[in-house]
Image (cartoon, rainbow, N blue to C red; front, top):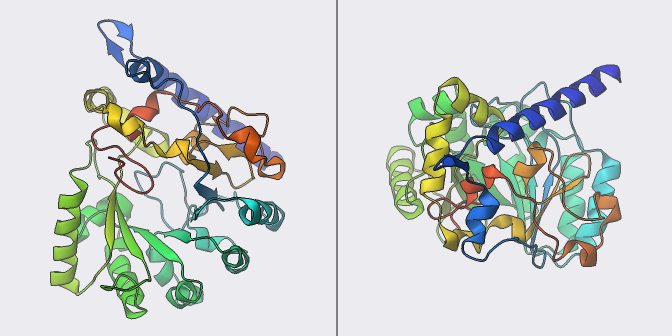
Length: 350
């Protein structure tokens, strides 16, 4: 218990430190250029929540990988796991919300001991799009996960999987030795079940994050390159590629500071700011639920300990009328979602 409390205090301290870094990191003509001032220029401040469309639930930070860019700081040593009690509270909301998408994430969500039970129960709610964000390698981690493609198919799960690159060197550099080969095998397993095949209703999408201190390229062009390379080299097919900007928080922020790329990266985000992207940022139609049931505008805010600006703070207190229209909590990291074509968990937003 004491060890758990100490870890929680340490994480809160880290969140506070990172917020201080972000708040003091971008200057224009000697003055602090705040994100809220930037969006005010186009009369878009304050951002407000619209009708809930996507309920994103983080079922735990435990993961079989330790990726360099991970904004959740996930890894095998993380013990934060959503309990069955909190899952039941989430199920109550899933059944009464009009959200069309349920998005399960982690860590590796499959490592939660109640993951399969939760998927089975949640799938009964009739959600239109049921997403599980898989890191792929979990499918090949050990025998108890080998049947995941079959399990996903049974419940018509939309699989969204991280794939940093179509080459071994760049993938393993970002995600660890051996990740590329395991990812390729997992994709083949999913293809064998019908996932990602032309005209198949079993959706398989990939997620691309840049491996360094730069913004992603054009999503459409990247998708063409990924599809050609994976098909030519491995016979692998998938539906869509989501290009996501790495936000300057958690491990990626630490990397930027250690590599002395922080200031340049933040200036790159500000220089690429697109007011059109602000109109479709994911925080306006998404509600993020942490492993312990607390509510956030997005999972990035979750890692910075920036809860929703509402009387409703926990999934057990959920009331749509109190959450809809709430002002979105923003800070400097939000430049990441509004740079270029914009970025969200579903890829580009413009």
